[in-house]
Length: 128
Image (cartoon, rainbow, N blue to C red; front, side):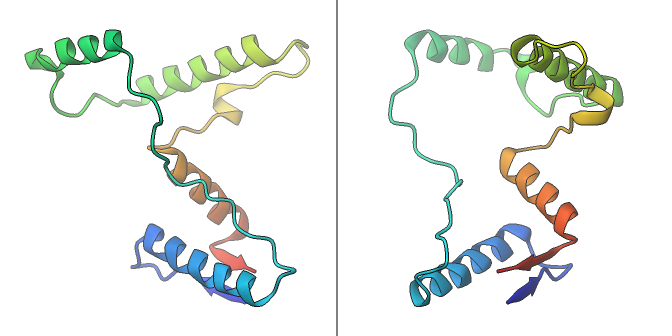
């Protein structure tokens, strides 16, 4: 089965449709592997009181409303910070490092990132 996304359709509507179709295929064919649900879950613990107080204090500030500035310089600094952290935390051999300009991509959200990488790799075609 091949499914292609139409240019004008919302990607998340398409994903929901593909998941339903695939799950129906799983029900009919027990050899098909079930999907792993990576959708947003519900937190099981309430936030810490310290963080609730900090949040309340922050949203009372008049300059905290609106969209944040996001310039190429901020983007580069963000990616450099991610690569620095990753190299410091996970890589012990200097021969293998993560470079911000080559290996780090930032997205608006994790679901967006997963599916944009997926569609880039598979050229917007899904095969079951």
